[in-house]
Length: 379
Image (cartoon, rainbow, N blue to C red; front, top):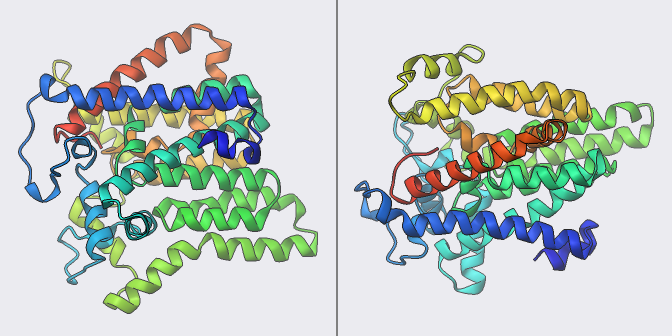
């Protein structure tokens, strides 16, 4: 897929081979760990509703993947009780695309989901290579891809989750903004906002990139159209909920059923570290909280090394996520690619950092993959 799109993205053959190698090696680690997972840890018994007969696809369908499966197969449902976990909490673009793939090709929905997620991740890596090369050079771009692909949360780029779609759409939006193609960027941002709620925050880099050109009347017109396109995904989902269930905010109300709510600024980080501080136990929240603190620190580097639109986007996303607690932060942070650019910039100054971080990331990615495949929560 990289070779088919490399010309359009501006990636030559050698660069395309590098992108493909990073993708292949990282996914080999994920799938290999999943295959070996029964030999490492015993499975946690869960509802057979989300357990597939296919032994290859089965490890990819865990936790929230089941919600996307139900949407793709049966559509949305909401009984008006926000205290119950319901699939209206999940945004529509990914499961609808899985459904379309199933209808067009006849392949099963889980197979479509796996192919779409991995394919989108591959194209996202190629897009990021072009984007980061244009900002800070190809050496940093290559290291950025390696760090992101082997990050523990990158597990979800291969499962039936929305992370691959969101990474692709946000990277394409930034690339369009970089070239001042604001309407195209607004279209990509609109797809992102139909994939996940934070997609609406892509309005920030859009406005940041257009700000120096606001004196130009045609630019103001394009910016207004781009802003409407960027918010169209979220707006469309809310309109659907208003028509189908009489509540345009149903997707927000049911978040309480998962225990997520807004709290003090970074209060979730402090609480999770304080409640999981016993040194003799492996604590997932310790990892999530630690990664959150790392990205907070990396935001400073993003502001220093990249246009401020990247820093503002990363900071707003990190704040929004950290105020609700740090559970699942490894997954949420995996799509905040400016943080990986910042880490790559630092790694070029201190040459020993990649030799330390990449093996640690790879080991954690293998552990996350093993645990996820056996129904242990990793985000």
